[in-house]
Length: 158
Image (cartoon, rainbow, N blue to C red; front, side, top):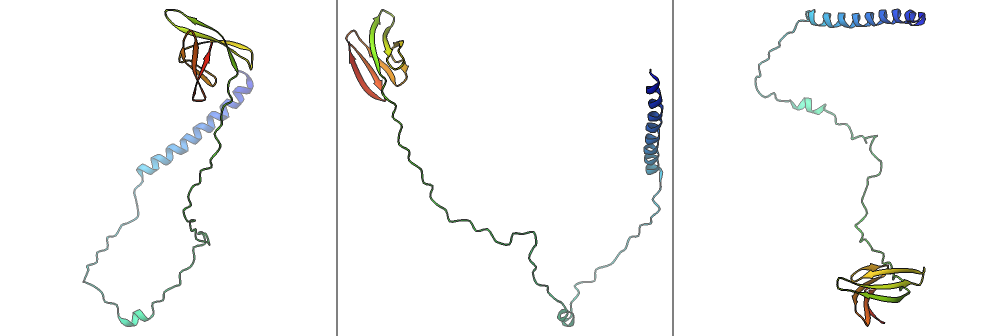
């Protein structure tokens, strides 16, 4: 250990011992001390109802009610119930999808349509009941494609 650590360790150790010694002495004194205060039991017998004379009643004063300084000065009265008015916003109608049918693939397992989205020039392969943006393919045949656009049934012939 370095000299600095030795110099600070000894005084700290002594301080800790003194503190715990004081705590220990107080606990010891608490449990070993005898209570020197005498307790007296006062017994009174109840003799019945005590009547208050009318002369005593004359001198009873009632104080006025004093407002509580911590209460708000104004009493809160809730506003009458108002009907909640729902703001009607116009329904947002999605714009129609501008697309072109490039072909149909029909085999034994599935039917697919090849469409080209003309807004961003991308090609997509869609199966029946598959959605794409605002359209959903309903039925694919050799001659036509039936689809829903904004919940309207439309047919495109090939």
